[in-house]
Structure formats: structure tokens, C-alpha cells
Image (cartoon, rainbow, N blue to C red; front, side, top):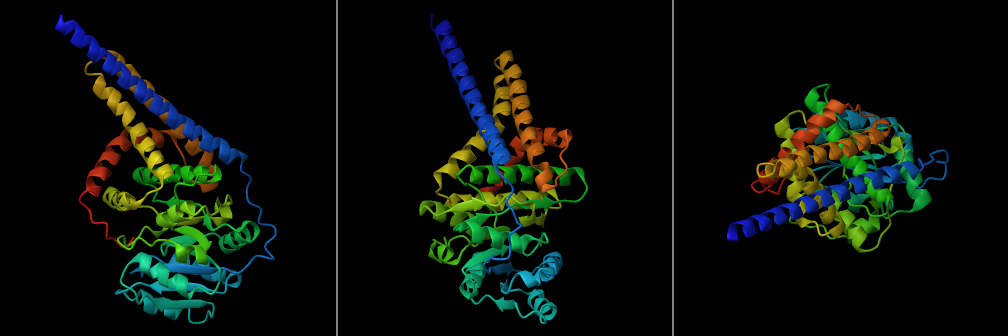
Length: 376
């Protein structure tokens, strides 16, 4: 009598697990759809009236970027009439970056190249730059980025018109014309679309320090989490939310910056491991809930595949879950491809959907052993 009873309990437990997995997947799909709806309804920010834009300071933290920052420097100097305070903060450079910057910018009075007197670290370099900024509005950008011609005007105009405490701006990742490079591009596109969708929906959960601007007072009042060398962008976001500050996203391609994608899989894994390692300091419950949802959603079809060992029906569920998530993800990528100017192909999305659960597990494993004290 015990065997049938025990088998029935096993079937009921398996059915409960399947229902839970399907509910998680439906919540994920609903979130993706809501992001696309919000994005479609949000108008592009109008840049026609820039004459009354308030001034803005721009801070670029730099650490040994001698071979990487020429695109940013050239694109910034082309916009030199749009700003009067550009600060390069050299954080204990040892490759001659600081001397090269001083040589190239010596004819531009609005550009300052300063050394970070604080302990080494990107966060400390940014904090020193903020303390030197001349204006109440500050933009932060990474040294290996390249900006649009209207970048400075776009950020200044938005701050003047809307007065946010923190402005999240779009970032595009550009890779070599390789299959792996395109995978990196569309994976980052998905992250950026979720960043924009959540912010436009009124509950910002992500941002990227490669293109971020904020009120000087707001920055100086936030907890710097000195136990982490970097991660100032996400910690700032969390603090502004906690203090009920105004956080906006600028939907205008002119405000976008481009950053270089990882060149190899190992470089990509190191980058994502750094990001995940810093997340141990995040306390925003919306971010934590969304991160858990993303993790579980990617694990659903592998979970069903494992359950198929005991039940053939679970194999069908695995295929259905994979296709449903793939369709939702591909629709999101198609929605964002024109704005971010990223080539999206179904085969890239398909391969990424197959590989991503395993990539997540590898990143989670690596994050347990990598140090959080990393500059970037």
C-alpha cells in the first residue's frame, strides 16, 4: 500500500513544481511585454530647444587607458563648445595616460586633467572629480566610450527641462563582426532595454556608469560603500530611490554612448563576474526580485529537461518553455534594435537562449572566487 501512495505523492510534487515553473515563466513574459508597451508609449525626448540649457560638468575617471580613449577624447573635443568643464581624473596611471591627456588637451581651457589623491579605485576617482566640478549637474562617462554629436546637448537639455536627481542614459555595445561579438551585442541590448523599460515604467532597477548624470548634491549625500572599489552607479541608484529622488531615462539616440564589447569569452565572463560580485552590496528589493526572476526564468527549460527523466510530458514542457521565452526575448530585441542600432538575427537569439542558462551558472560560480576589489 505504501508504494502507490508514495508514487502519488511524487506525481503531485512534480505537478506542483511544473506549475510553479510555468507561473514564473508567465511572470517573466508579462514583464517583457510591459517593458515593450512602456517603450512604445514613451515619446522621444525633443532636442529642438537647447538654447536655455544649464551648464554641466563632465567627469571621466581614467586608469591606464592610453590605448583605448582616443575615440572618446576626439568626440568630446568636437563638442567643446557645448561644455565648459570637462575633468579627466587620472587614478594612479602608470602607462602615461595622464601625460598624454595633458598634451592633447592643453589648448582647451575647459578641460582639466587631475590626479586622484585618494586611495586607488574608480569610485574614489569619481568622488574626487565630483568635488572639483563647477556645476550642479554632472555627467559621468567611461574612458573607453564614444559619444554622439548631440550627447552633451541632450543631457543638459533634459536636466534643464525635467530636473531629475539622476538621469539614466542609453549605452550601446559595439563588437567585432563575429558570431560571438553579435551575441555579446544582443545580450547587452536586452539588458539596456530592461533598464529603459523599468525606468520609464517608474521603478528603475538598473543603470550603467558609462553614461550617467546626476545632481551634485545628490551624489555627495549618498553612501559610497567604500568596501567596493567600483559600482558607484548602482549604489547611487539605490540611494536615490531610498530617498525618494527623481530618476529618469532619456529616450533619445543622441544621448547614447557606445562602449567596446568584450573581445573574448573569458573577457566577457570576467566582466559579468565583476558585475555580479558587486551585487552582494545591493539592497533594492525591486532589483533583487527582478534579478531572481531573470535567473529563474533562464533555468526553467533546463529544469523541465531534467524532470523529463521521470516524465516524458516534461520534455514537451521544456520545449514549450524554451520557445515561449525565446519568442518573448526575440520580440524585445526587435523592439530595441533600431534605437540602439544593433543588428538582431533570430539565429543569434536562438543560440544565446540555449547557452545563457549555462553562462549564468558559470558566472555565479566564478563570482564566488573572484575578488570584489577590481577597478572597473
